[in-house]
Length: 83
Image (spheres, rainbow, N blue to C red):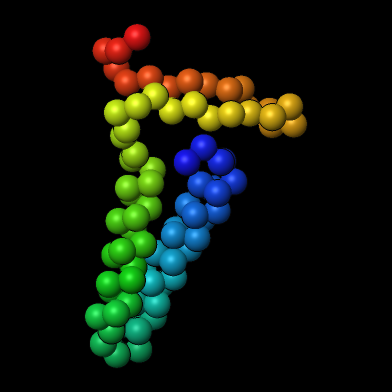
């Protein structure tokens, strides 16, 4: 995955799902209702997917291409110990 906007959109979407599940769980427990297992499962899956996406460690180097309108410079990331 080298498309920045796709990664950003997925990150925001998964984070939003996780936050909504936590907020919904607090709201349900505040009014005295049980938290559905499906909500716990969805929140856990979203949080696990978000962690996997953000802590991605590949064995190959990752190059993020840049266009002229993006102010962030292009960076090539290599695994430690390889040249």
